[in-house]
Amino acid sequence: MKRLARDNKGIALVTALMMTLISLAMVIVLLSYVMQGARATGSTKQYKNTLEASYGGADLLVKDIIPSFFNFSGASSSGAISDLQAKYASVDLDFSSGNSCLSEKLNNQTMLWTDANCGVEKKNANPKVLPDITFVLKSTPSGFQTRPGYIIYSKIVDTAVVGNTDKSSVDFSSRNPGGDRESGSPNPIPSIYTINITGERESNPMEKTMLEVLYSY
Image (cartoon, rainbow, N blue to C red; front, side, top):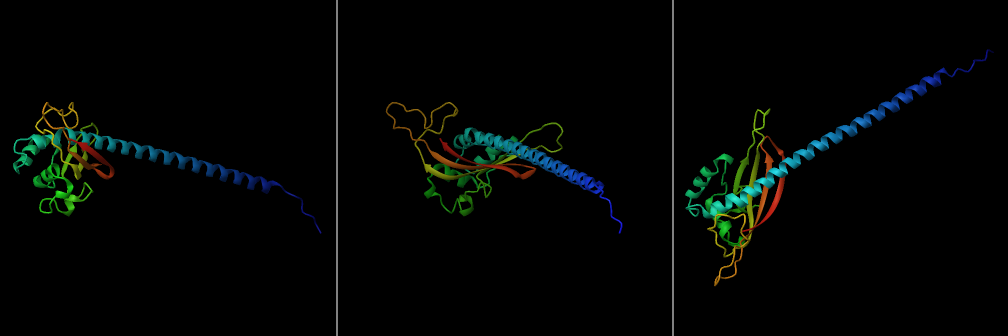
């Protein structure tokens, strides 16, 4: 009987194939990490952009729009909405819940909001469900066919305190919360509101942030 000689060439081939497979697996894992990092970076950037837009919307709301509603001529009448929409036409200002509900929320504690003016949906904590005030922060960067604006939905969800402060002032940015006490006048008590805000990109509602603002006026 003829005895076969040992041949190690097959082992070298198997070893080479195993090394190739291991190298390929390492490359796949590395690419996976790189892709996940890129997606995470992109998501973080989108979130920060939307968050900054929401902060900007909150600033515009509490420093300009609500004070204008208080002080605009005829703010207690239905004509106030059309006048304010004209004033803030550049941001597509809209009062979805209506003038009467917003007035009631601003001038009465939560327990006194009536169903006649502010029904269940208007009292809903989600600012996208019949929001009190909406507007669009627009931008015009080059290279975009459509403006990547951000829609701001806002709703007063709680009026904890209705104060006695003067709401006829014009400059709200520098005064103390509740105003300054004059000689012989009662201690100023600011009105306190909780406002829910949702900001989202016009072209992609999945890019959104939600804020809860405690507003002292």
